[in-house]
Image (tube, rainbow, N blue to C red; front, side, top):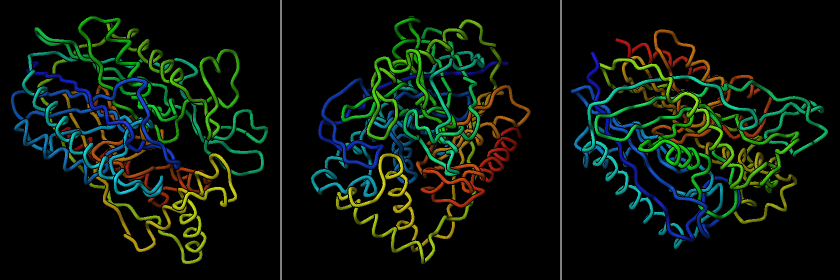
Length: 457
């Protein structure tokens, strides 16, 4: 029997101009807006505990700050902090929330502005939690799985003809041999219809929200999904929950036809522009429109959340690696990247790797990663506290016993990249910068599978 109640709320979370922007290893400061940043929340209950599914337009919220935010939301809305699934879309044109010393070293004044914004964001998250819970109405849920259109996503790691591995190589680089890995082009859609209220769509698909570039604030492609659906389907809102995207970008390394329409090549040799975000958002909105009227409705008689801890080994540097790492890190911190003998994405890779080595020089030996499960009847979300490779999402989806499983990146944590085992052997930006040793992805798949089994009980 269906006993589902559903509430929804959304609010604006635009930062002040001048705030540092998260996402790259170069200083950027907000000079204006392409579109608004927002937070959206879905409150779900079957008469017992109320759970919140929350999507935030930001690059990432680390575990400690996420715990702070969830505690504030729980107190304001009168629910348990353990029942909040706090997800960030990973836009690369949103404000920084912590001191990003590996990106650049902010001044005391700049950090004070960040701290004020964090306080503001906490208030807005609390507001959206209160409003979503207050808005709960009897509802029903349907689901469907579609296929993403061409030209919106690409595996971004490549084996080069010289035997090396490179993330995001230059467009038309003659040294490119082949991409490493396969896309998961499944687009998961949930539809919630509510008595006397708006319909809510949850979109789950894995591709980086890294299309816009520059110093203008933007929610990237999730904005265009929301706008396109709102403009097309009266009374319908969208919550974007980004899937396993750690090795998936939007750049076609061999652009042809109209690929370069309204697009430019960025400083790191990728196809980026507000036009790219619009294209991807509209294309994914088109997939929603294909599925919207044909979802399969199922009864929901249970809503619950569960957490599962996975302990993984840290990718600590050797004594031999540290001197050069400290030299590169110091040069980058001083704004002297021109003295580091690399360019574009190769420069980003060595700077990120150096930062990882300096950061982990004194430990810890292991990390505890918290996976977050949300059960809505026969549908499950598995939240991962960082950036999982596509293979993690596929491995988690392969569990039986559920009508639909949706992996979600950057949920209740922003703890870095989780590459597959072979990526550590091959190299590339993600593996070289990862806090974790080879095997972390496989540990997360096993932990996610155990979490799904526990939620079935």
